[in-house]
Image (cartoon, rainbow, N blue to C red; front, side, top):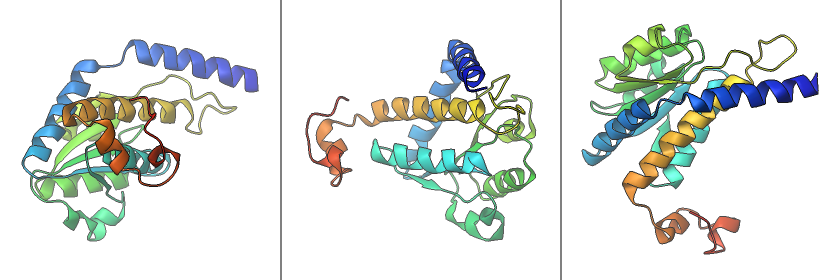
Length: 196
């Protein structure tokens, strides 16, 4: 089973990378950069496993020149949507694009004047239809015994947010000095030998 998993992951990610939508990634990065230029903020949100991708994405972007925040996928409809002001961008991550809690959060974001960027496996999903731009993170097989637990799909979502962070870091023109200022602790903050 382990070997089958590894083969599945390899095949799924090779196919996914070959079809990565660079144009929509650029559109999303431009939307976020425009918001940043008007002092608006970037947020990431998700439910279940994608919530961890959202937390990672917010941390990654913050450390590479684009401050970002986590919008809790369910708390948003119980008051946390108050962190959104008109013009903010929220990247909503959902494999199906049909998760009811995240759809409620996305609608709350829109009602507060925010802009949605959706990351899903289905460009025709309800979440994708609410978004200004959709980023596809689609795999055919997850790689597990039941083909249910998110495995390959989470890796695809991670690749999408990492690719987005590359474009944002490039736009931010973050140099090594700025990068190290964001990492005063740990080994990254101890050395100037980072390969950027």
